[in-house]
Length: 153
Image (tube, rainbow, N blue to C red):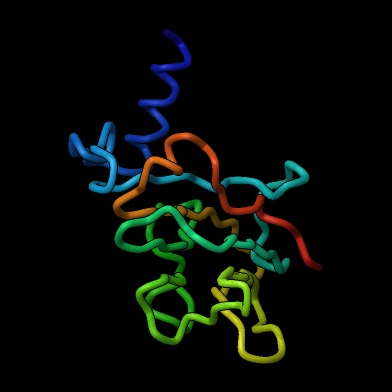
């Protein structure tokens, strides 16, 4: 029971509204959210560091996926030079790897080359939401998942 209360409290702190399809959506409809609060080593996410998330091919989304970065203090979008600090599969500018996967870098400076990058602010903590819209059965079976948030430098 305590675990359920903690989960509800955490969700409502993060998202002050809720709809039935966010909690128990039918397969292929609604959306599912995964919160990223720490890197793969268990460290809080730091705006002065660079991280990478690998999104394997064949994302089990009937519609699309999205990674968005938020400010820890305000729960609002992280204020950067980009008005929308995120990467989404529905943006034609999103870079897809040859095998159909995606790599998303999150950090204060854009890595060299044509990459998917979300800017952070040195000195500010951040968190992220992975959203998947229209998740298929593979998502619920846990047969697919994005990588952990790996610190690059």
